Length: 363
Image (tube, rainbow, N blue to C red):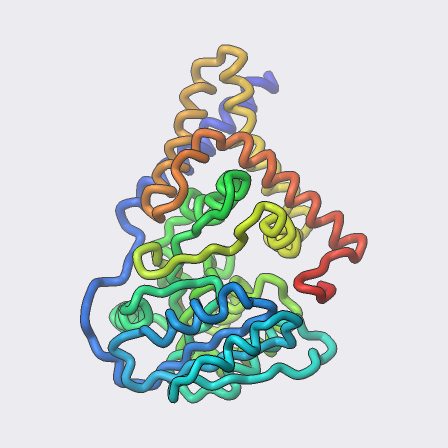
């Protein structure tokens, strides 16, 4: 009886995921290739802390943006202990301004404070929050703003193509986009104000200045480790609309060159990703039912479970194909999910023990 119930539940869930993935594969938006000049002022804002390997590439990518005659780029060195500031200061361009970060105030996380200060010093109508590990195509910002205006949205989150540094990372990193690509009807959430359907990626995030200021900016989420999701949720809470789009053709991001860095990076936020410990337990149960149980039952000879397993792999393949992610790790999906579940639990344990740190700062 229990076996049958588990099998039926897994089957229904995977069928829903497959339907959602197919829908998103055909409907998720991308920017249009166009040469439209953005006359309004644009501010590209980049916080950097110990980014010596990315500093020049990130700024160079921003400076190469086309069709933005009124562009300002503000980079804030957030008390780096490496050569980040020195490298930034070697770049000379009238559009570039450099901030040197001061001491972190109580109650703030470092990145949130840096982005708040960057926004406060900017003058653009459009604010572009950009991580140092993102590289943009020359038309990325202009095309994204054009789409934002075309859709009459207040914010837009072009999801960069996620690069991987080593094989273990390739098992985990593609799950980032698969997790929303297979569970949310993205096109149908554009006009929604439901906070539960928010998807956002702070690697490359565009928001109208008026909307950002109306919700209090990053000062309203000063202690949130998932600043991108919380900012998007805050915007929706106040009636502002926006969406994630496929940005794989206009931006790339190598978050973590090594698996050890990925483990540390994911551990700092996974405890918060599902809202609460109960939410995390629910997510883990969902992952087990959809991504581990079918494969286990299939090995024992269950034909239906084998079909369900194939369905899960198809969701991975479609998500990887559409977002230009790693393909081969789709066939090791149960292993990927097992590692992800471990990271979720590991993150919760570290948080409860007060051991979470990021770039030398406690979280």
